[in-house]
Image (tube, rainbow, N blue to C red; front, side):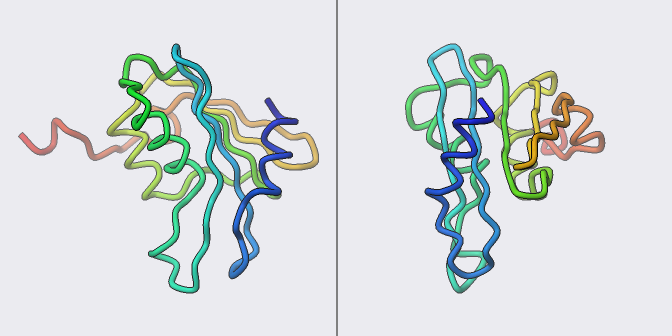
Length: 125
């Protein structure tokens, strides 16, 4: 997976903030990939994690189909809070999360550990 994500970093459009990120959502229906696309107005772009997640959803993937989330960046950063919210809403809290940097380090956790104090569907009832 690391090699695929490193190669995918080259497809990132990080022309403005120079912060390339690639991601993969592993599901029962296959793997779905995404890269971040930056714009001069940060809110108009999209993060790699949501790009991959929405690609999976567009292809019919349901919450129960998602098994793993893989994220690669130069520094091995975890998903931003907007991405965390999308992951909480569309993945199970026991989904495995792998964070990679480009020099070979890996962090492994589950979504519950990444988002211990989540805001979710149950909070809207």
